[in-house]
Amino acid sequence: MKNIIVIKYGGSLMDDKNAEKAVLRNVLRFSKKYSVIVVHGGGKDITKALNKANIETKFVNGLRYTDGKAIKIVEKVLESIQIRIAKKLKNAIALKKAFLGVKINSLGYVGRFCCAKVQMINSVIEEGKIAVISPIGKTKKEQILNFNADEVASGIATIYKAKKLIFFTDVKGVLDSNKKTISNIKISDVDNLIKESVITGGMIPKVRGCAEAVKNGVKEVDIFDVRLKGTKII
Ligand SMILES: Nc1ncnc2c1ncn2[C@@H]1O[C@H](COP(=O)(O)OP(=O)(O)OP(=O)(O)O)[C@@H](O)[C@H]1O
Ligand SMILES: [Mg+2]
Image 1 (cartoon, rainbow, N blue to C red):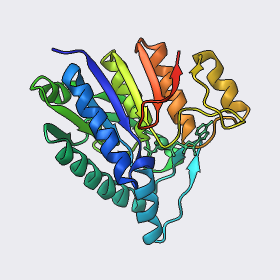
Image 2 (spheres, helix red, strand yellow):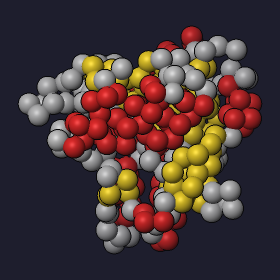
Image 3 (tube, rainbow, N blue to C red):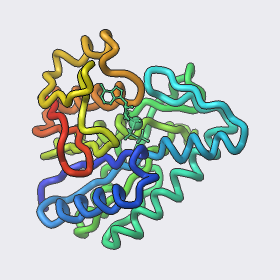
Image 4 (cartoon, rainbow, N blue to C red):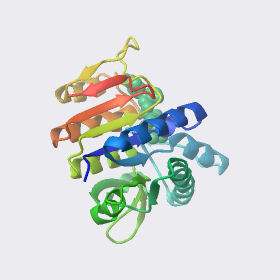
């Protein structure tokens, strides 16, 4: 089998058709050399759908509070994104609930990633296909939960000891307080950058996920824009 890479496709890019094309082109290019697992987000579309349903959006440390009504909408939005991506990639399979997690009670129906359904994922990549995973998972007791897609990508990359973990997002990597890209971030600097509020919002789970992956043996971890420019976490 080829080496495995995990690519997170950020929901922040999904309202830009050209950005989507560029991300999927990158995925296809990587799939020539690697077995690719794609994890997608959907933050912007989810917020739009919740607004329509008059549900207020609230984030805690970059994680979306998700009540009983919201989780149904989140699941629907993510499912349609997942199907769209798998269709556009052609040689890809959309996997349903490909991982498990534990409920974080203070956030409603939100989970912390625990473990991937490795056999399910393997059956796709062993066939030479791209696995497309959405950040909807469940507890061992079959409770459906919303997850931050960055945590899922990082968790899966760790389990597979992936060769690379790439986060495609709507910024040119992690920016410093002068809005300049920080080209390399050491994992020991991550907590300080969050404490100093250089890193906020959705970038928090992303850099934390990166740091976890690096600590656990993922060789190359990058936060990139669609041109593959950005920040390397070392
Ligand atoms: N220091 C920073 N550098 C760059 N972006 C930052 C920083 N701090 C906070 N951010 C925010 O993080 C955002 C990226 O995270 P966000 O969760 O919004 O996108 P995503 O993960 O690509 O999408 P999704 O969560 O839908 O998958 C940026 O658009 C920016 O607003
Ligand atoms: Mg995000």
